[in-house]
Every structure is written in C-alpha cells, then in structure tokens.
Length: 261
Image 1 (cartoon, helix red, strand yellow):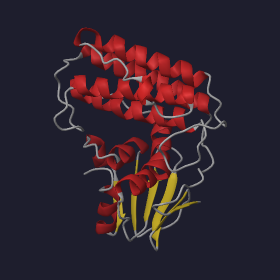
Image 2 (cartoon, rainbow, N blue to C red):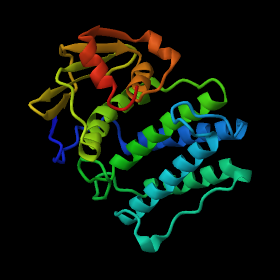
Image 3 (cartoon, one colour):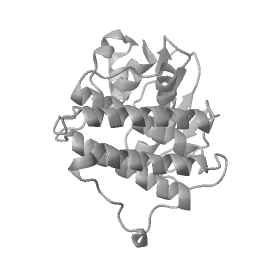
C-alpha cells in the first residue's frame, strides 16, 4: 500500500513489469507516433492540448525524450552548461523525433533499473522509473497524434492497465507536491474488465492512500483498461461509452477532475 502526504516522498509499489517490457512498448509506441507524424497534416489540431498543432506535439515529446536521455545518462537534471537540445525543423519532424527516440532507447538500454538516479517524481529515486514513465508518456501522445490525423489505433490492454497503476502511483502524488491539489474526500475503486487491474484510492485525513485490491469504494469505475486510462487523463473518447460508473457521482467526478475533464 502507498501512503503519501503532500510533502512526502513515497516508496514505490512492487513493480508490475521489468524494464525490458517498458522499453519494448516505448519502441513500438514511438514508431507509431512517428508514423502518424509522417501521415500528417502537420497543422492538424491536437484535441487534448488546446491551441496545439501536431508540430507542437512532436516538439514536446521529442524534447522530453532528449531531456530524459540527459537525466538517465548523468543522474541529474540538465544544467545551464548543457545548453538547450536542438529543436526540429518542419521539413523532417518525423526524422528528428526518431533521432530523439533512438537516443533515449540507447540510454535506457544501459540503465541499471535498480541503480540510483534523479527524477522529479515523489517515489524512490531508482532507474526503473524512467522506462515506465517514458513508455506511458509516449503511448498517450501517440494516441493524441493518431487522433489528430485520423482514427487512433488501440492501446495494448496490459500497457493501459499499467498506465492506470502509474497514474495512481506517480501522477497523483506528483500533482499533490507540484500543484498542491486537494484530494477528494471519498474513496474510489477502479476495476479493469478486460485485463487484470484493480485499485482503491482514498483520502485518509489528508493522506493519499492507494492499494491494488478488490475493495468497495464510495464510487467505482469499471471498464476496459484503455477506456479508464483515457478518462483519467482527460481524453474525450468514444471508449468512454464502455465505462460503468457506480456509486457517489460527486466523488467520482472529483477523482476524475484531477488530471482533466
């Protein structure tokens, strides 16, 4: 079980997969992202990021990869001496992104998942956080890019379930620390119906608590893992029709409003 106050650093839950599993998904999702960029058009709007075009999304994800590469290689955030990474030109955005991804994958292949590192998340400072975080960042933005230029391809259900787990373990604590968000007062049970994955999250006197368990909450959200993940991250998707909300509507709305919508 994870317990966290807004000023704490929590111990990570037991990892669900090894780093090679996340690196494989990062490789696949990155290739799909680049393919969507090549299909274009580059001025397509990105629904999840108001005011952004596909070009903005490419630059965002590519620069995140390059920033993460530096951190993985040096064990610290970039210093002023490091200088800014190169930004892409519009004539070969997909090529620039593939170069960004290749550098990250090379760094992650050399990473000791149990060794010390730096990262900005309120969990243990160990290397295995990076392959997981980059895989999920890339998968969500791959979906964004594909949606901008056509019909998004499905999430791998196991990856989506792990993304829900990471959202509860890392994203909510990160927002507590960085944004000072107030936790909802009630408890929420989330249950994937297509793959394994169940969680209970609640506010214990201002302390955030999480466990992987089949236990009743004040509200519940059941459905396919991808539909749940997209909803948690504030993505408006037809998959939302496959979700089954139960219990206190206000509690559910409060938990779902944390990262968007």
